[in-house]
Image 1 (cartoon, rainbow, N blue to C red):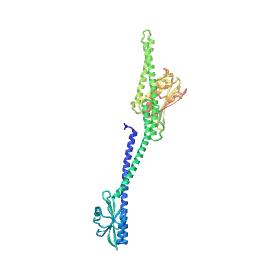
Image 2 (cartoon, rainbow, N blue to C red; image 1 turned 90 degrees about the vertical axis):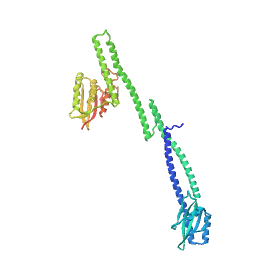
Image 3 (tube, one colour; image 1 turned 135 degrees about the vertical axis):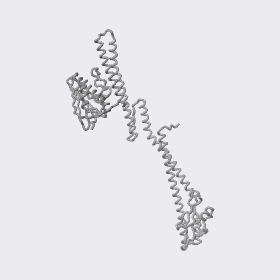
Length: 460
């Protein structure tokens, strides 16, 4: 059973139908034009023959001339009737029938010297005919009637129709063959791409499509290959993400469960119990923060993370953050400095942007040694505000820099619990900056420190 849902069949049928309609209209136009042209030629030839007889009669009007004209037409496929001024028959080339009699009895008005057509209805009448007047000694003497049987014309048209039908069959056959090849050539790449998308839907990202040129099919093929690569990358990222979540959640839960079991023993002292409960509290706090970060990332992915932007004077905003974090820096022995001029207006969500700055400063204090310096500075660059947070900490290896904003990525591969974070902080920072229509860049050198550059649009 033919599958009418196949695009190759749909395309072929649609194209065949369109070409058939075009061919029918074209053939009707050509046929009508050729038939009309042929009839006009026949009438013109018939009238020219009548004019020729007129010229002969006007040159030599006598019995022998009339008889000669009648004999000549009797041997031809036309007929002649010569009448006087009152349409009385002088001579004919053959015996008249009723149709011819009817034509020559029609009332005649003024006829031009070169004659006129009396009957041109070749489809319904037995004859086509013309009339030409002739004069003797400058006085009109009579008329020359010319007749041609429409059977001959219809036979000619019939042969023409046969030629047209044969030509139409040949063209239709060639058209069907062309459409089959054309539809195959166009649909084969689509079938390949359909199979490729089916593989993608089943989780097989090993898509191998040939280069299909620079047209729309080629662009679609390249898009599918890019999609396959992106899906493969997303699948790998998802696997890594789930593995990282599993590890990050399991670690604090292991600590919480272990120390909770130990704290329940009756043979431990209050000092040890308080220490274990303190560890449980810290691990619970880390777990809570990690879950909140995961919620934030999930909202950002679904575009449900609300950014309530308002006009904020950036320097005052940064100084307020400076006051909040300064005690922690002093406790670590790290100097914190803010360099920002007044009247720098930006559109930000104060709460979310504070989360960004806190994350970056938390990294600075976490990965810096005592007696080092962390600085916050703001400057204008071509209508853009650049916020720079720079430390003199451990720095980041060059190999790690391209992945520093990836989720759960941590430079500290050993995952020391004293300094290692969850690996989500910088991911959230990047997402929040982009939600503010800004950008963030990083420059770092091992042993010398790290600098983050946040670019925002300045309000006019």
